[in-house]
Image 1 (tube, rainbow, N blue to C red):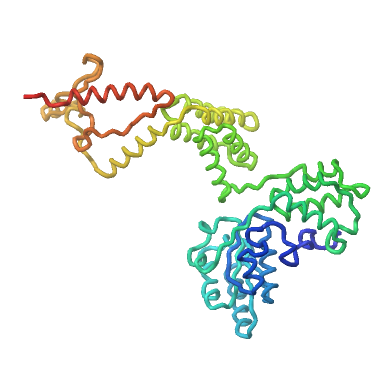
Image 2: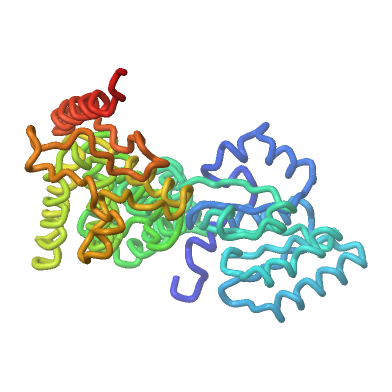
Length: 433
């Protein structure tokens, strides 16, 4: 097989019926399939993970329409090549030849490069098909999106990948059928799971296993060699990264330690910077737990320091224990809400004057002007709180920012503050005549 194309390329589906997965889009009767079978082409963005069939689908679209298929990669092509290809397509269009232009990794083009396609899409010179692994809402400009329909492709299910592997094993012309390999169902299942939704990876793993198989059989020892360094899909900068940190944060907030530690493990397994995770976990301690359990912040800082001292893998256990604790303890965002509301009032009301009785009076002139006049020193007052003393600016008098919840330590804080606020309100009532 050394001189032939890779197995994944040789086994590329030749028609829609050979495609595995993507039933929502391509099952008989589905809207996209009906459009393709009727030859009704439209410019589109194919959004999905690697190995889910984006390039194959683009080729089949061109074949169905009996159109010329042009392909460029945003990784390799610059604006001059884009203009050259578009010029060719415009020339073909004038001669009555339709062109399907497939742009792989289209999200890697900048705005100017993306804009170059717009007039040619509008004029009908090309049926534009862009493939991206990133969320088009973030990576593609609105002008291009408005001229294309976005189709979301999903990672392939393990069963679909197993079906494709069996087809490759039986096909004597394009696949591995001529080798007469012996492979049991458990081996195919293991390869499919290791591929993590990526059919291209699965076929590559199968081809490697066939090359190293002994006595015409892919056995457990062969698989152990081939699958030793398998990795999961993870993009440290893309949407998947932010989806996973969102899942971790929301699992902690929902008091689900099992889900929280799973997402922590997923992110560490994918190569996420542990310092980033420590920072986010510390944020959860103050944003979602707060004063319901003040120990959470101390534990977060300690776990962060422990990781910095120990490194991986030992320090990961400190982050794991912190995650379990944060997910298990009482939650309150009362401090977070109080902070946001106070910040909002600062922006809304501008530079409100500090009440005179609260001002510092280090000089005689300042004392003569009334700085500090009437201030009550709370430790000298019966009960230790000067209930009649107003500490907010006059425009905000009576404003309540901190409203403790009835969970964790804040139950006791709420009882105390409710009593204090009631006593203050009573003390500040005007005396009856």
